Amino acid sequence: MRSTADRIRQAVSFELIGILLVTPLFAWAFDHPMGEMGVLVVLGATAATAWNYLFNLGFDHALNWRRGDVRKTVPLRVVHAVLFEVTLLVLLLPLFAWWLDVSLIAALLMEVSFAAFYLVYAFVFTWGYDTLYPPHRAGRLSA
Image (tube, rainbow, N blue to C red; front, side):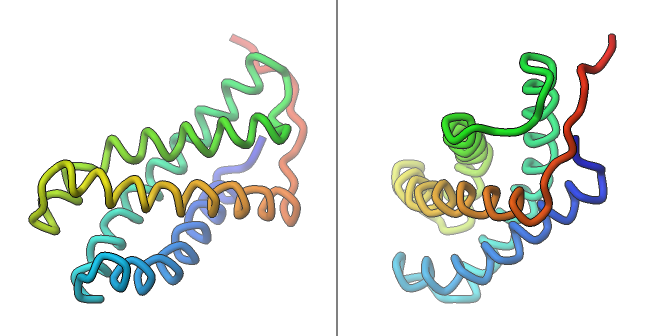
């Protein structure tokens, strides 16, 4: 299992790199000013950072409970990335619609684009992070 400090480093580095990549890309793709998109991305990243910590903590506990190990196979990495992005999409949809003053359908299309980007990014980032900072093998938790 990862320490709290390690989980925080993982979540913060994930979001900072993501902000630097996605802000200019999506400001251009959706024809919104960089500042407007930047604020939305930072708000989304803040929510995503908190969710990243909670989601990864819960996912690792579930893995440890079910398998006695937190290491992820490629199929588990795919499940992990998809579940994270779907739950985050549901949480952020109202924020996107409100901030960009667009319909929920338009916001959903934007969110799906963000999710597709972050789905690939989360998979690559987490694999790279686990390679640089391997999680410690943990035994089953009691109680």
